[in-house]
Length: 170
Image 1 (cartoon, helix red, strand yellow):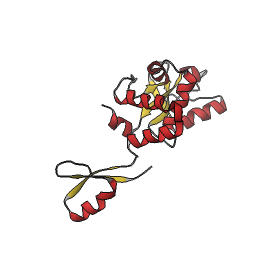
Image 2 (cartoon, one colour):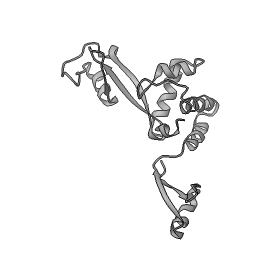
Image 3 (cartoon, rainbow, N blue to C red):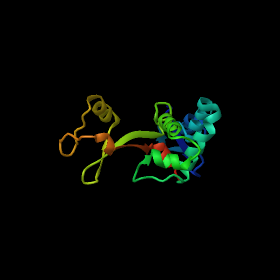
Image 4 (cartoon, helix red, strand yellow):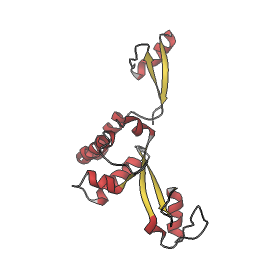
């Protein structure tokens, strides 16, 4: 992850990263905001290197997200929405893509889980809590404190877009 300043002159032109220090010293430019992630294009370049032949599928997936061609359920993407967007790939392949996009290297998606209560409300549950519940064969409803039998039948894997990805969505 790179930390860099995005610097604009008064006309709104963006300077290249290497030139921001000199521009700030001259005082003719102002800092507009700080970006804590690599640009989306840089991420796509990394995908091309990491995935070689299958990179076009991942890049197509990101482009579909950017163009809002993949439906969201509230603030989340589901595996099913990704599967519908790339019908030629299996669910396991889609899970591999989303795992990669939510991993340390990309951080474009944030893995989470939602638990559907008996009243059909949804509660977001962090992945650590779900993994702990799977290991212990026991899940406690965060709202009621009651143990939930067959909790995996009412728990769904979802993905939140990162701030960087949200900013890129048109």
